[in-house]
Amino acid sequence: MELLPLLDAQNAEPLYSQLYRHIRGEIEAGRLRAGSRLPSVRKLAAHLGISRTPVEDAYQQLLAEGYAESKPRSGITVGAYEPDFGRTSPRAVTDLARKERDIVPQSACYHPPTASIDSALSVHAGERSDPIDFSYGDVDLSHFPFPLWKKLLGSCFLPEHRDLFRYGDPLGETGFREALSDYAYRARAVVCPPERIVVGAGTHHSTEQICRLLQRTTYSPGHTAFAVEQSMSDGIAAIMRQHGYTLAPLRLEPDGIRIEDLYDSGARIVYTTPSHQFPHGMVMSIGKRRRLLNWAADVGGLIVEDDYDGEFRYAGLPIPSLQGLDAAANCVAYMGTFSRALAPAFRLSYAALPPALADAARAALHPFDRLASPLHQKTLELFMTGGHMQRHIRKMRSVYQRKMAALLAAVKRQLEPRFRVSGGSAGLHVLLEPTEGGRDEAQLIRLADEAGVRVYPASVYRIVPEPGDGTAVLLGFGGLDERQIEEGIRRLASSWIG
Image (cartoon, rainbow, N blue to C red; front, side):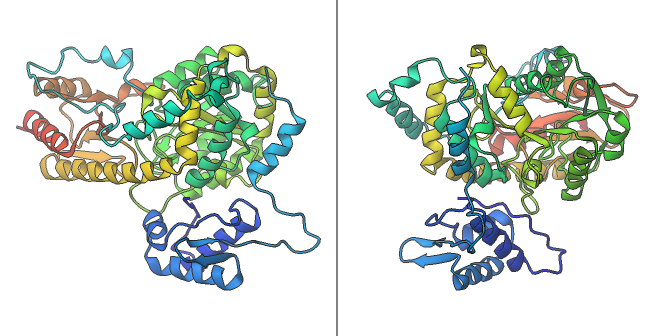
């Protein structure tokens, strides 16, 4: 179990009190069930980036008030909370969903390099037989639990799972959506019952589903503008245009999109990547997230939150998803994927939808939306419910944090001050840009290629090209080890600086 409270070190209220109130509130709301284990003091302190003392103090207060219990060999567990007499009994999200299901019948690597990038490369990694590819679509598979995955997949072939070999539910398999509801809450503070979750076959497919559903709601008719970040995935942009939307680019500030531009755009729908903006890499501040939610409330708008790289944050306190901060739970459509946390080959994504879009999904999704394999859904469901997903993400967060540190150290040692790096606090890629003029993006890519290193252009993701574009390059590191990262930066320094 992971907890994602919003802690503010600048608040006059002590951290232990903030943490105590958050956990108590989750217990009273029924989202932390009686008997479930709370994270150990050490793990929760490491996860939140704070010392153990506030966690210990918060747990002691919960124990004293009966919200938690300490059991031998079981650690600290959630106590049996009794609501006040006369108050509506709290209900967990999935319990509410099961009630909804009885009423509502069921309806019959992120952003990999595309052709636009391939066209920017004129040669193939020089003459070297050992090119180092800083591809931002690659992940580290050396730590993937292949034997366990094989075992879980094999269990899907047991007689009791024969229904997995039929056509699947267009919304996604019921058990998988229940597991997703729990996982998204634990990992990213997303509060959404399974009946409002739609499974997709990758982020592009989830985006396409949302674009179709928007046209059946009050968000879209008569409003064809889709506000977007001024640089974004070209694939996502193409899908929006194919559905008839005009893209309204929003300028980027160090902490995310410029909210004033959003009000000026006249759009009622906005797409954003707040956890690790693609491709620039900034993380949206908590203050700006709240201002964005205020915009949605002011105009009756919708935020499409692409939680790109949301699992991998290396600096500062974890920030909950926009969806989790939306108290009304009606103005954010949240998209998550497993292409980064696991592997892109599984083609599994999901969207946690507000009620209006969820109603449209039950009415509008068709058999051709059955693109996510029921077998893969069941395997990942078992992986999640067995507690393996959280352990794997914790391991990979540590692995990628070491790689990011190696990359930043190598850049600092060999490329600064001639180059600056951005986006180093989260995710699996950074943006590298010269601090002085003289060479453009194409020249940097060509020189890198001749040195046996592949880096990628950032300008192809600009919605509206402007003067001065075309100087930055993208470096992904997920698929490289630390030795390759350091050697790659050494080659770049030799080629670009001499």
